[in-house]
Amino acid sequence: MLAPTLPAASPSPSTEATVTPTVMDLFLGFLGLGMIGFGGVLPLAHRLVVEKKHWLNEAEFTDLLGLCQFLPGGNILNLAVAIGMKFHGPRGAMASLFAIIAAPSAVVIALGSIYTRFNGPHLQHMFAGLAAAAAGLLISTALKIAVPIRRKPIAILIACLFFVAIAVLRLPLLPTMAVLIPLSMAVTWRAAR
Image (cartoon, rainbow, N blue to C red; front, side, top):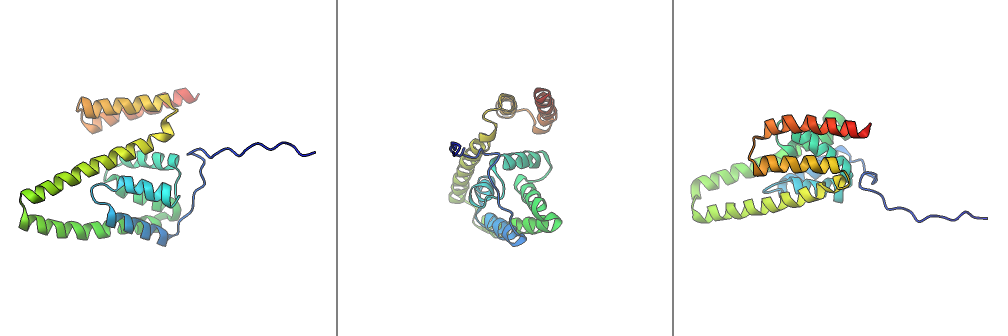
């Protein structure tokens, strides 16, 4: 007699299967990301790493991004190095870092030359439009990376405190992080006991 089978549960964001990229995969992925990432690469990085290539699942991406935001330097550069390091050590980190800065460096040099030579109202309007698009992309990414913490009230509370401190009260970032990160760790540790 056969035992009844249960329907397969859909994987949660923290248990989705991931794919291990090669060094060349990392290089080509971050090179393409650097070439198309005008106005903010983070939303595109999420799409590449989690949704398209499946190198990390949602929870891993959120954890790694949190670590990278805590470290000095650009978030996306830190993230590229961390992802490269995770899969192939220093070789992967160097490949990812070089790939993500190569194309933007060339483009920035070219745009800087154009801006210096042709600065005017039309160019300023173009940059204002790019800034608005970048803000929209960041909001979209913030909503996506909030998914893994949607059932964690403490994490949501800490995120709300960060938002109020930075966006409403206009407190400096470093002191805010110095207070809220240890608080978050302590509360999370206590809740897990």
